Amino acid sequence: MTIEELIIRQNKIAAAFAMFPEERNVQQAIIKYNETLPEEERISVFINTADVPKRTVNIIDLYGRPECPNCGAYMMIRPLPPNSDGYKSQLVCDNEDCDTVLNSIYTVKEWVNALKEKYEARRNAVESDKSVEER
Ligand SMILES: [Zn+2]
Figure 1 (cartoon, rainbow, N blue to C red):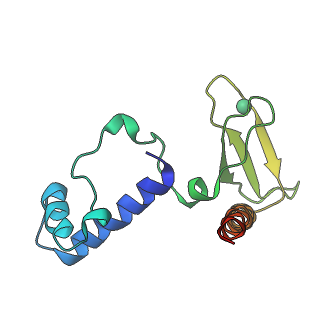
Figure 2 (tube, rainbow, N blue to C red):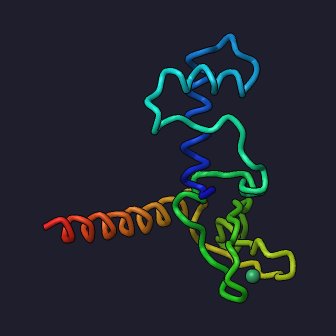
């Protein structure tokens, strides 16, 4: 399961609970919600937990995280308290065996915006490739 698929699933589960607020049980809410959807948009009631990324999913995962220059693993971005060096955030390697930590003058929000721009540029490139093929 990709992060995109997981985010879509989470949005649908939220919609299911919004539509059936009396349901306390996620499986029951999904079953009822599925009945309102066309077949191809339904989501599975159970998922294999091994398929789910362990870390909490957030918007940065959708846009694509920066990669560690030393080991290539994804990097987590955390805000820094005000400091005399003017650093606003820190990139921390997600690999337990790697202790790479990079200081950044960008705020977490600026990082998210930069990653979003990169993601949208990538997506637009994919879409224009598709329209070329259709011609
Ligand atoms: Zn690393």
